[in-house]
Image (tube, rainbow, N blue to C red):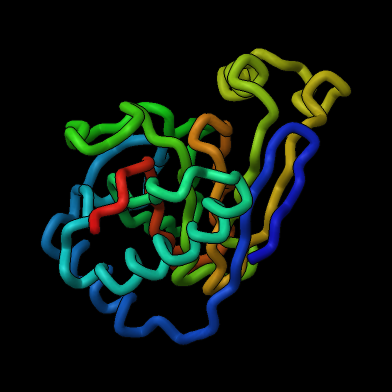
Length: 209
């Protein structure tokens, strides 16, 4: 796993090789069951409901949770706690679809009694399909600055006060993990192909013996 040090925060990144065709089939099957999905940060596109307990997505859920062991070690979390996924959802962005600036601090689901902290700690995204020019992910230095950018209150969002914006060009099979309070957005998809990702939130839970 790679660690990406931003000037104001840290990202963790790992790449996984594969064609993910079975996973894609499960994703489109889920979309056909619930074509409306949900509206959250997405402008257009499709945002699924929680799939963290869906058997079709347990393999990718287990993979993500196994990857966070490196983050657990890096953060020097005490040994009797582990990161587990709270909720997980699918994003499909087609041409011109994007995601507004947002963070993942607040969870939409009831807090299990075993969760140590009420809000999520880590969030992230796994890229199932990510054609070139289908939308970079951007990270912002503070919620105050991201509000001004998102509300279109700036003549020039690229001025020196707002230069702490880091843009990543994700690739198919890449996993990014970050702290849940880090503001981020997804740029518009400029292609005619679907950009498919699976996003998630994680909290700390006692290790079950």
